[in-house]
Image (tube, rainbow, N blue to C red; front, side, top):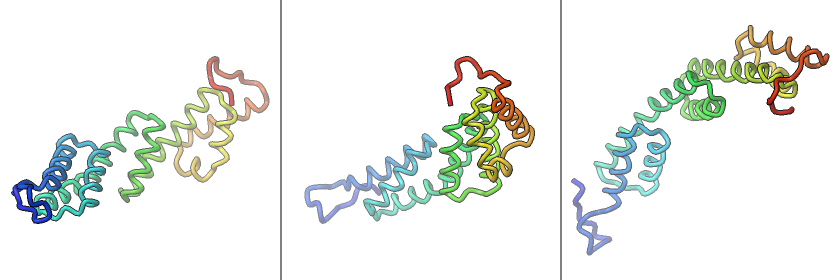
Length: 169
């Protein structure tokens, strides 16, 4: 019941904290928006709203967070947008999503980084990626690692021209 008498607010018949916290949680749950959901949970917990309706909404929202984070990570892997992948992996680690899923996402991220650096013939970027051997060897697809190393070697010898329009290292 959202209508409660709050002795601390003698002129209020409706406890607005409860209504606002519950409504923010419900909207975030309905929209299935991870950022909005996490923000609404934090706000409701910060306000320490003790109503049963809010507690139930918080629990429902918390249960939905890993589901939405997993969906966001999978979408980022499909789209192969580096900035989205990096952010989604960070959230996945923060929420302790399964290691196998995080490793799969890292594979996509490292492979895409190498692919883009190779396509752009960006020697500085290739060097920085290839120098991080543990990440590259563990996460990137071996075919793209070999191609990246070959392109880097050719660039170092000056045999491969850079792609027109590619940013300078």
